[in-house]
Image (cartoon, rainbow, N blue to C red; front, side, top):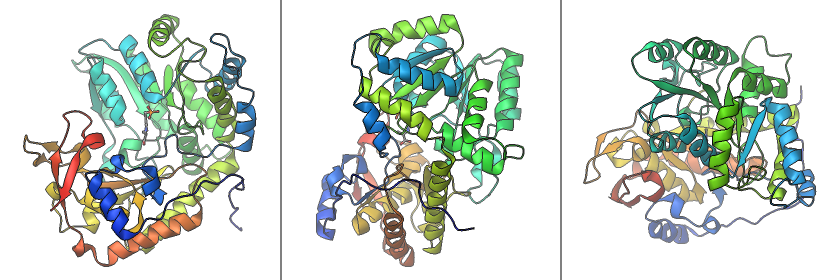
Length: 455
Ligand code: F0G
């Protein structure tokens, strides 16, 4: 069977920059070797995030022209709510400007100080918002997730034995939150069987069960491809079933909403809804816009349909799978098996001459920028390691990874061939790559504001 090309063609394009090697050297030095400080016009291929970076469709832009900007009761809200209700099945929906706003609104209403929030893995803002609400985040991923080479199909699952221990134990569990797909641990999907088991445990112990469903459509696609019993289901049916299993959801719609901005809280409990709504109105906006414009809501209403199209999902998964093969052919290894929204390079394996305190993931990311203008995100000891006051690593992260996030409908195979070629150049002579040391770092959410210098 001949693989199909993407189910869209390009109508509007945006130029990208090709800086000289010396201009790139100057740019990354001026950025304190932190890719978050680079300007987008200093970047050739930007794989920093798949969040808000996707291309919209002509249908979304046509809908946006109909955006109703009324302060209350806008038409666009009702159109969006109808789509979101049909997809998720939740009776109560609240719009927010992005995922982390939903986290803050929900956790401040649901979590009591001292309670724990248990997850397969909290995303970094989710982790921070649990702590801000006075809670303690606890991650319980399955053991397979720690074997980067294992090709087990559902390495995003939660460890059910440890989850039950947590629920039955002395700690007060305020919430169980399943991140689909598991962005913090290699973009691995969560199986429906795992979600059903989590639901049963949460019902038994009377603890609310929520989804952090930023990549609900991609998780559904991987379930259809990998989990026995779901081959006859559409991705949309699988996504709807996942939402049905939980008591509510948080969604950053900057990913599978196929828009630049947006988020959603879905709830079943009316008292919790009333509390969240009051918080939303005080901090995000009235409950029919929640920080979004009518035009955003219109784009989202269309995006929620487009994202579950099997032709779209299969071509996006195929694009990532081809990119993964090219990277491996170029001599680098990734976290297996390849997911959809990102590939995670195993920098620890590519640069064994660098110790965690020399930040091998960061070194690889910087080298990809120096050699090819490629921006990526370190997920290793710079992001997760424990440091002392002089910024020395006292406890390294379990892995030294670099995430190559893949914006939706943005880059062509030629862009990925280019990235793989740049990586191939590094993999041929990795010994030339030096480590880095931190020169300044903030106490919280270090990776966004840290500055470094080459060793
Ligand atoms: N949950 C998950 C699983 C996420 O990946 C993100 C964002 C959020 C919540 C927060 O949503 O950005 O809309 O406030 N992830 C982005 C990323 C930033 O690059 O992975 P947000």
